[in-house]
Image (cartoon, rainbow, N blue to C red; front, side, top):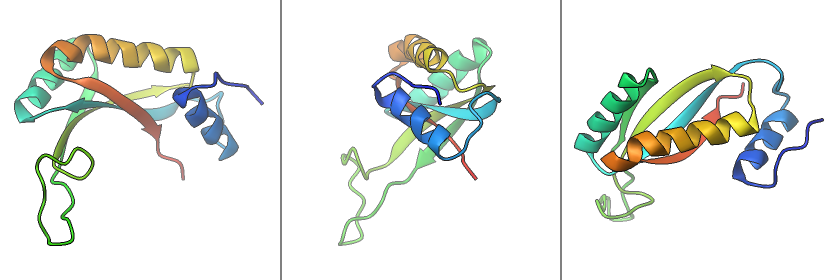
Length: 122
């Protein structure tokens, strides 16, 4: 079994391997870029598209509190915008770190920030 660096990305890779994902085969990896609003989402989406990335904008309306209200300022449960970037690739720690840095470089000036990644496991 491969040993991964002791960081958040290494922990996810270790968990994927433990769940039986064949780490030598390409899988679809979704990278997430957090953006503050719709205008930023559109700008980041366009910038990433110009760089050849396959993207999709997602809006989450947020979750209501006990009184049924959604707090627009609640960072955890309030409304949010995300630009998702999809890659089919062999899960590789160095490449995942590189891609996240590249997403930050492109999206940062437009208000975006890389916010993790994931793989759908059956």
